[in-house]
Image 1: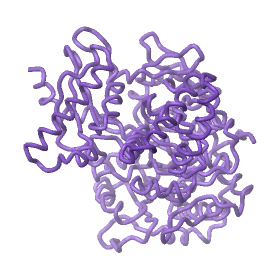
Image 2: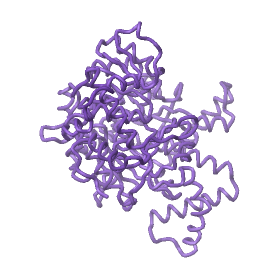
Image 3: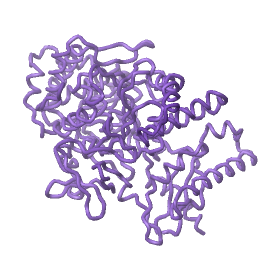
Image 4: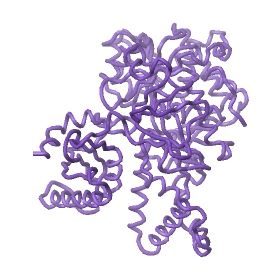
Length: 591
């Protein structure tokens, strides 16, 4: 099996649908059970929606906003929009009315497809205020608001009915789009400032599909199953969790949400999963807590499985004969149970979107799961590099994709060039010039270097590096990652630019507080939390260099979340927001 050189994303879809026909493709949860849509059924629905869009006046280069939780109609609507040459503008389901207003006004979108009434509620006022949107299509039947709107509101079925009399062949129309034609505008969630619209062409995402195939082919790709739960409005899931599965003819199951992920994994039995480091950190904490709670022989067996697995990975061939025999037995007694928590059929877990702590990667690898860390950003559609299953180096983000150039600038910044690079930021030439040089190099804003085997290593974000008063460069994400591995700490942000030492903003871990009985606002609970956090920080200070030690800390008023704006939808800390909120208190720690 190889990846053909398709002319565009929609022709790729239609050709795969023609080949795979009645085989199951998309799986939504209905009435408590997963129900499939075949490739042919999906292609028919794509054509129906595309004709409906043509009927209401959507033409090539028009922008159509798409707001929905992950579901089959997300993919189907996305492909339908692109198939007629229109441009998809994905938006997060967590967007406020203000967020939507910015994207509507900036993109100049003519229409929107929204999944349900809950998501229509914040979107409609933004659409009315900006005056750009002419049509809103709801995947589920909307409430009758037509009398209150100057915008035509349709259900998805009504849109399909409108287009049914048209006789265009949508797959033929789709063939005319070229690889360098704009396919979507993905607004970066951003750790600060207004989101910018990243213009991704068909070729950029197809380049990612080919690169992902080259990286994962050693797994023996066949009838693969993906479980989609990261937001499809983010380029990581859009490429790796949607178009890459299409490119290899895989099935896609849609998760019901992070709270039901464990159940959905057992039901769908995925073979490949993409996720951000925070998910793996959460699973790491849950597994460790469960093992410690069981105690006794089960804990000893688990620890032995981890120890031998880690030794086998870090020092191949070093296990003695008795250790090899024990390791094989522990594979059945311990590792099979860990693999079962992920559905029992996983070939690989892929981590991206933020740096993965190597200890987390080693933990899952030692327990029988293949965890591959990759690297990229929305502006590169998004993947630039990934570890291959046969050559995993846990402290790196792997090898560069084929047909991709990467070099390190004099100041350590990673530069990238190739078809995967975006066309630029939508209607923002100044911002585009800031990140793409005249000779085509994308300035990633990340600092890194290559190891002796050509694997890329990321040290930190260029703009996030803390330079202390002594002139030392400190990578905050590394310290934060170590802090968050402590059972007492759920989230952390370190602070100390132009200062003599680091301080931190800490969110205590809920589970730890409950287990310790630190509930309510009693003086005893407050003192217990304070002492526990101090002990955790003291432990990590014994593991890091002198300039990386956290000298003082404050506790956050509440967890960092997407809803309060303190995290991006891919679980990255928004430092600008946190500094604005807690800056005075953090500065006071230096008094």
